[in-house]
Image (cartoon, rainbow, N blue to C red; front, top):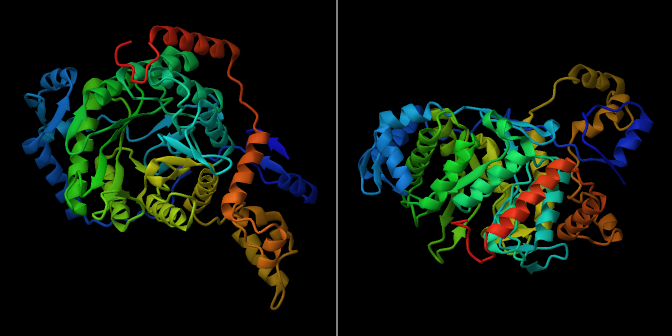
Length: 518
């Protein structure tokens, strides 16, 4: 099968053109979502204001710990009340600071055709990251390598509904921890020309990512063009640590967006109450969003979170629960109340294999995410076992689910309504539309036809080898990888990146610990 390079999608005319289209894989990235679905808002205006007031009370009277001397000094200069490492934030100060966060902005990929807008109704799908294990092309659970990471970056590039390669989709154990961020970043840049994420595992690592972005895009370009995303996780309840805050400063000083993400384990590090959990999470997110503007006024920032509820039987995190969906709806309302873009997590699951549990959990989450109005939709492909492994099979099916959600978000198409309605008169009672010119012209765009789902009769399914979805997905992944064509980096930029990596690997001692000093 031929692979069609990125180009403008167009409607093909004529039988020959349609036959060619069916035999050519189109890997053109879908545009960023422009979500036309009605948002599910489970709070009325008074309840939104109640959450806001509760969060502001937490910030003013309980305070937030910033375990970082630089941040403490910054907050003192900004006029906050500081006692030790606890910062008490006046609601007027918080509102004034977050008012300068852009409500939307555009991410710039190295291929400008893959630029995407974020904010308002504009959203992107981003694969999962951080898995310490993978389920590979043979569905074997094992430790990942740098080659496995490259494989996932290639699959991200070949999946039209994924708008990013993320960063460490899986942890490459064959490279020292202290230097790993360099190779992860290079893999994201090399194997796809979509946007990517930047490592924030230490302030020094974040600075390296910024330097590599400056090599790829140009120092001046970063000043007013978002090209990557950093994620800074809070330590709930109400703590931000030196590692995350230092990484946040590295990104914000270069005008690159960060996700300000409290890490919620509902019932364990938050109250056992959905509204109270959202009030605490909201306070945590606001404190970090406000700090981004202390670092650099006007820098892009994204209201983030990771949501999970905790099983009171085992203490294990759960996915796909009703409360997670409710919290997504509520957080979407709060982010829109403040006028800032927001991030959520998608297709999460706790299943150990790609089974029915994985499908139900992921589908439940995806549906809620789409109706919550999220902008940065992270962990959209591959997540399983509470994030402990990335499954190749699930990655493929999740990516197709995102394509289906992308189509749903467009809403009904009306551009050919009159033409289609005319076909009713042409066919009349008792006929069929399979051979009608309108059907032949429009069937491919009229109804989404999943590749990973088998809708044939059971007899045909048996004749085709009785393949279940895991086997079909793994076969599809092998096909994609065999067709993959690398979008080559500019030769000078590639050499400069490799030179930078080589120099930093000489400067940073190879160690199984984060680079905090070099």
